Length: 490
Image 1 (cartoon, rainbow, N blue to C red):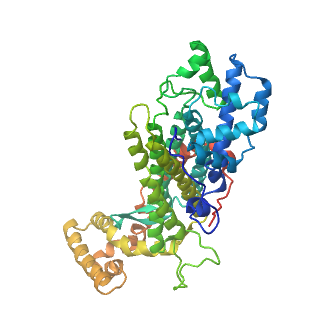
Image 2 (cartoon, rainbow, N blue to C red; image 1 turned 135 degrees about the vertical axis):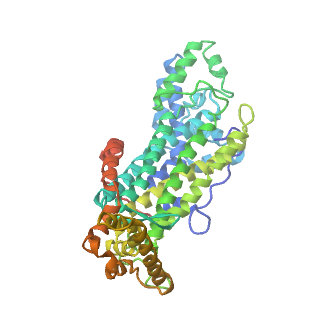
């Protein structure tokens, strides 16, 4: 929030004739938009002025019950038109709202903002908003993890071809791959909660953080100034306040906040990229509604538009971390005003963007579709090559020579690969082995040697242990909100 300057300007007219951020008008949830709304912000300013007056009265300043009651009665009585007119004249948003509040509280007007600086309402409101915005994100992220955990548990043993470098690799399971996604999101959940818990109130500090104005109000009573800071901090619902501030709370806090949100963006981008690639392979799809259109030109298409949206917005979220890094680095001495306009944009956009991608990812995770037959066919194409080592070992156990067997397998594998690559045919390595009398000692074992489940290692056990030991305990605090379904704005 600003301190005398950068007073933003005029409210843009709503409707179809002016720009509106798609984050608010198209994507983010109503509850997240409200937390970053003007009404919520300016109502919180008034609440902070009330808490300050109550605390000052408690500590002996001549503030009457009538003045306190008048302020309480007008917390929601905000004349936005008057505030805009005042700001146009004063070029100072905080003083514009001091005057507007005082207009509807004539008896309390003289004590509103007593001893405070603009950052008392500006920064403290920002911290309240950040805390409450985390309260909205955390259960949404927990629900995404929960939905994916259900998906992983159900498919813990379903073999699928693994990819490294996006080239065929050893088998894994659909559930194990999903746990890679879940693990990243669990780290994000822990990080978001940690940063929220670490938030501290700016408190009652004055213009350069020295509390000089309050020390003067209380006639040099150091203990009362300490009590004032503590009382207002507790009223705001914070356990701790900064001992040291300049005019603002340190902008390193904004770096911490946007760092964990950017990290969440990276996780979601990776997950949704995987889903998009799997959709191309026709192994998995995001939900596709009955009347949904994939392409205006190609009616057969089923584009992964939700996953694409997540990737698109996640990229934006990841880039926003640059703003607080730059801002913190150029805050001269006790503060400079070049933080204000930037923070008005990046803090809100980060949370609205995170809110959108979590709403969308929950919707995706509640309707993921898997195509086992497609997965099975791809495994059949690649598994014969992967099984060659097992076949060689079985032949040696049956009395064969390891080197002779290796050479036989090498020749047949090259022939099968030529069919796949040059002729576009299916992998016929197993048919070639079955037709070769040299391998007759193990022909009866081929079905067992080619069972896909024997190539997935401990994947299913890893899924079970991971969910039971790490995921479910982490989700326990959010059990009461797990049944909420995701709703997309568009």
